[in-house]
Length: 447
Ligand SMILES: [Zn+2]
Image (cartoon, protein in one colour):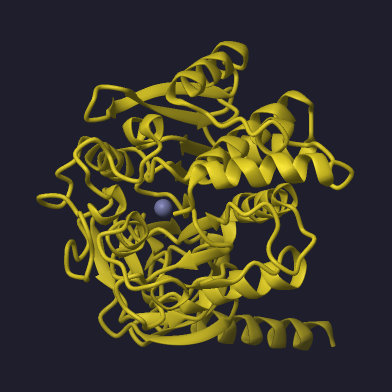
């Protein structure tokens, strides 16, 4: 980590020399070099909650080891409980300030909250639309004790970003604590992830060090199971938003274990990124200022948040033909950017009991599949219905979802006469023959 006084110096020099470049959008950080302390953060988050009760819930989700509050902002349009189509809102989880001396990472979390609150108040359509369909959960400063002392560690000299229960203390590492979640800060963060936001489809944890975005794993050099999703986001960001390097953490930075990023992906199943901001005012050989780079990271954040709907598998059935007692012919599209490999069709009765499950099938990210499923032991009943059951992503820990299959999409071919068919269309060979015979006799009568 850089010495803070050096950073201060470089800021003051650049602020005076390059003030024409530093057009102020965040003058409080870059030009006045004003970072949040725990006290100023406490004032700001409480002001937001007072001024914007329509969109800001402020919670205390625990305390630091020294008893400072862990402030959680829940930002969404709270006048609506669900999305307009009645489904659950998308959930984004963001934290900052694991390391008390990484002030810009903490500020980036602050700037993200500030952007969505202030732009909502200003009537910006992008933000109004996002907050109508999405919940942002933002914990800006996890290590308030370390922040006040300008140190990486918490008060017990533990590196909080090595203290999570994912391959804890299995890398050459320093100061991971006496056990996983030995510290009140990481324990509170993990409880919140598990109890309030387990369905999140994006987790971003914000740090300072180098100009890079890191995805899992820190533990292993191999690409994560959901590499297609991470590579898609990388390529999309590079093509349209920013040249910021985006890499697997182990290769992009160094091997690390027990991080919140690996925990967020490996245990919670979230698509997870570590945002790092370097604290040099100018990258050597570049004229891009820190402020421009922060704005660039905000653009990436907005892209990740505004498109959170896509960061999972989204199966969409276009047709489903049932040859009763034989097979199901399924056409399914994956509208999301993650692959799913354990999908099944389930048949349930009106009490919700599963009567039948198909064999597993996969649908790759952004692909369509035609799937033939064995249905020799499927028996249709009155009031039965079908659901898709699948994992949002490939990683074992990712959440399972149940999604109803509309009867309008189902065509049932039955070989039995007079059988009850739950679907909307009925093809019965006997009935068709009868129709032909009737038509023939009608023709005879007419002529
Ligand atoms: Zn850090």
